[in-house]
Amino acid sequence: MAGSVLITGANGTLAIPAVDYLLKNYPDYMAILTVRDPSDADLNTRRLRETVSRYPGAKASIHELDLSSLLSVHKFASTLSEDITSERTPPLKTIICNACYWDLVGDPELTDDGYDKTFQISHISHVALVLRLLDQFASDGGRVVLFSSEAHSPGRAVLEKILPAIPDDLDLLVHPASLDDKQAAGFHRYGNSKLAITSWTYAFNRRLEKDQNLSRITAVAYNPGGLVDSRSFQKNTSLGLSLLMQYVVRPLLPLLRYQNPQMRTAAESAVDTIELALGNVHPGERGYFELLEKDESSPESLDQAKQERLWTKSAEWARIDNNNTTLRNA
Image (tube, rainbow, N blue to C red; front, side, top):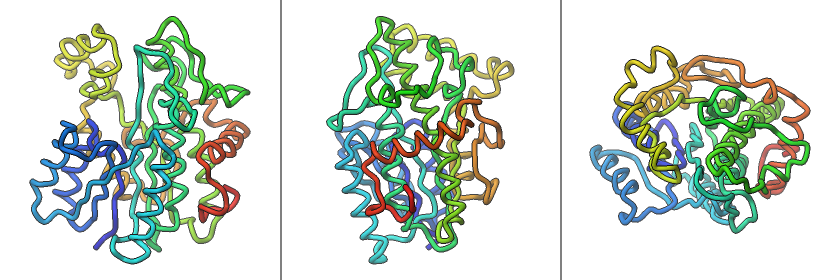
């Protein structure tokens, strides 16, 4: 078997067509699919299970993983590590950190770990998951795909009213202030999480390259484009924004993408995600990608001093130390 493909948020808008594409075109891989609610009571998990069922010989399994709980993340990482070590599951080829969260209508929500929910699901829990599993990659390496967004870069996102930024006091990222303008504040939290992911990826790659045992693992911060059919626009968003996306933006996508090629459907991005994750495009390359093109991320994300501060703090938030990751100086 070629290896395992781990996908978080596997019942998401982009993830379901990605799973379909993976199982159809790369049946030798084992798909490890994580969702918050693995029961059929969840409509999207049911759709994921139906997708898998279309491929009777599929090597796929669905697992519970609640990224709003570090206890859940560390428990899952331990179990998967045991399964790979005992050869019940093939070594990892890639980790696709797809899951994310936003709330554009409410105040900041704190998880049981005491962190902003948007920031923990998008960034902190993926840090914990990835760093716990590095020693479970195949000997020939693989790739970690962390999802960025144009929202990480000031002045690019239509919904941006407050510029994304890495503050001097990093605690503000996990304990953001409440504001009267819920949509502006919610999108700011989302943009900050994507900025943190992008910045952290550079520090991550530096450490991978210096580690003789892990240097064949590459990490990319990937902007899949503006997904006009994302379920994010149907949940935790205003009715006006939902209607705009459903009845104006989506029908006019063929015209709108002439002005902004970043606008696309989840199915289009799903194909690119799998090809990038498996190293079929840009093999051995690291850094920031927009769609499938190597690009330059925002100036702030390239600030190495901020990358290092964020790296250290992220490990602390994620409860990672030299006892539970093979990457030294984590």
